[in-house]
Amino acid sequence: MLFRGLFTLLLAVLGAGLLNVALAPSNSAPDGAGMEQTTSANAEVLIMHHLDSFSDRDLEAILSDYADDAVIITPDQQAAGPDEIRALFEDVLAYGNQDEAPFEYTKVHITGPIGYVLWEWTQKDGSVLSGSDTFLIHNGKIKKHTVAFFVTEKPEELHEDDGSEMMDMMDSVEETSDSTSDSES
View (cartoon, rainbow, N blue to C red):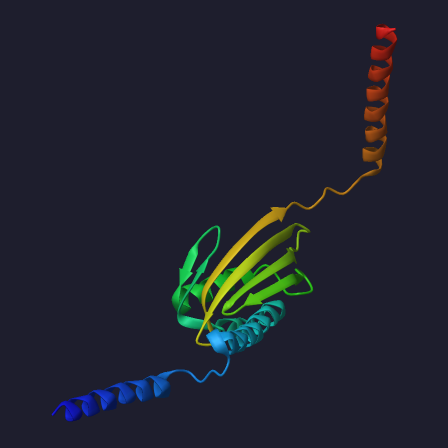
């Protein structure tokens, strides 16, 4: 009887072990390192596709990168799901094509399923948005996406008079400085 109980216990343990092996993802590297590399590689392909699609202003290609339950958080709003994300990108893409409003990414960092992108986007009026996006990739799609940016205003164009006014201001500063030095002597 004892032998039969031990035999049943041994079968149960072996069965559970085989079930875990069958259900576990195949990964020959210890500690999941191989799995992370694959995830990073897949995340990189997806993020590069997304950046290229944005540069091309290809709305459908952009939207194809998002999961159905994706969320984008920007400084001004949150968009959740396909309809809100479409509306957000329709508004953003209205700022102009790549020739009118060039977009370029300056750095891309990817670790596992997380991507971080630094970028600059020159607007039609000459102002520049400098920002960063963070992406969380899940099952080959963007699941979470945050955007942060600041705007650098377009520098005012110099007119011929502006140069002489600047020189006059510098002269008055020098004169004030000279009179202060003379009075101290």
